[in-house]
Image (cartoon, rainbow, N blue to C red; front, side):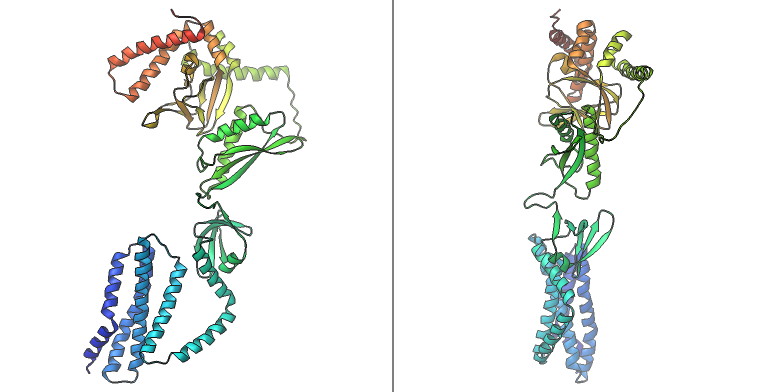
Length: 508
């Protein structure tokens, strides 16, 4: 038999063409990068098979006794290639189509076992006695098992972890004194990356034997992690006031804080000189713990400052400051000047005399907010007029079938909340802080008292309110200048009427 005839016979008998075609088809169908990498490992036994074929054909053409061994090697390599292609078709194409993802370690075990079984079957069919080989392999396996107990324990542990999915890649876990995210579970170990950019390698057997805390996992729930932020307040302030101030501040959205369950505040403990509180929230991005804690603390500090509730100081701390009459006068004068400056920049109070503004200044109250907080909410009852000293806010209106929409932005020198105070109607917009904001706040009774003393200012205020309402309507609908001018006069008349009714001045 010639070499060429022997080679053609070897190719067709071994199914080489089928394996090459199958490899090409799978490479065309598989798109996932990790699956294509796996497919390359199937190329290696196929390449060795193609190299072995001419050798087997050469020995076959000359009738050499080495031919059966060379043919066995070629068929075993073909069998390993066939197992790899079958596994790729099953695990890389078929099962993903029905939403089943098999762990990598399970696939490796299946491919490895299948390759061994295929090799033994091929050898048996070619007339080789595999009984002795199996017995010898069993003895070698037992010896290796005794000498490699730790390694086998890690392999079995890795299989157990991936099969029962008790710990999965992506989980945040706490193992002994280390907390981090599981990035890989291999044959021997699991890789855990900490928030400090450290990588911990843990043997699989240790994870299986030890206690592992999985952070943020609850059956049937999204991954959330409850966090605690502690702060202390003096006993002079009622707990109900402290809790209400903090929970109102935490009600506005905060990045990485879950809306449900809602963040809340509790009276956590009582110490000798202060009450200890805890704000509790659920973290939605488990990697952003410290930054989110900081954002929550900022909300708490500003909310307490706004409610004029200072954080407690240690009972043994004593601060002595010589408070002379001159120093008091100087501080009071500086504070009044700052408030007068804010009043002068507000269009609503420009027509007041200097004396009237000085009488009004002590009634103003500094009110800070942090970015993201809601200053007023649409539909709520009005109690305050706000004047912006610094920062920027967004004015938003809920429109039927369109959700909430931003209609304007206000900055330092602007004011809002006057319409609801003067007409008695609910707030007509929601105002949200876009940055850290400082406001001067004036309560409703003092605000109305100004207009009872100066009824002539009502006309100017009605003009301001009417102009704002027309501008808001122009954002919602397209109207001509003539229609806008007519509406301006109508709204001015309506506002003036409502203002006079609220002030008890009657209609003119």
